[in-house]
Amino acid sequence: MRRRIFTVGEANALLPHLRDVLGKIQELRSLVGERTDQLKILDVIWGRKIAEPENPDHREFRTHRRVIGGAVEQIERLIREEILALGVRFPQGGLEHGLLDFPTVLDGRWVYLCWRLGEDELLAWHELDGGFAGRKPLTPELARRMGADGDEGLGDGSDSYP
Image 1 (cartoon, rainbow, N blue to C red):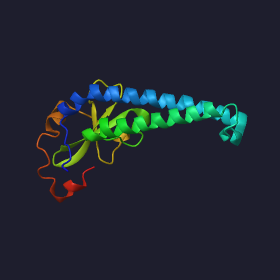
Image 2: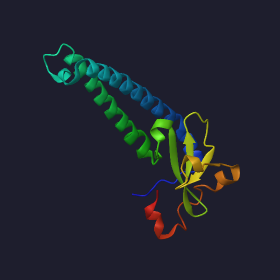
Image 3: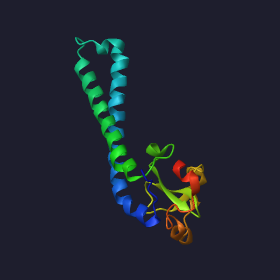
């Protein structure tokens, strides 16, 4: 399967959709956190006895676990179908901090356009191993050069794309 190479315009065009998806993911993560807190309280009160069907809080325990499982499945589906399927990737810490990377080509090498939730548009890029700490400003000149010539000149290493 051919990799997606984003231009700055293509990546910026996806941001409204990605904001919505990340918003849904954050809501689900909050739900997981709230339900996990409730499970911790039940654990403090009952310990292992909460898992016994005759326990008066067992039903609540099972409900919290079911809700958490469903929310985690929804998060995984959203990531898989609404982010990764587009060719966008989560860098390390991306889910927690609302970071996304868009693979692109600059002067014959792979780099990432880097976006953080809360930014109106793409403002930065970094080398493959640069991460968020290695972000560099996305100037208009660089933006014109990114993704414009596809992957010509990447050589045999293009199959090992990020």
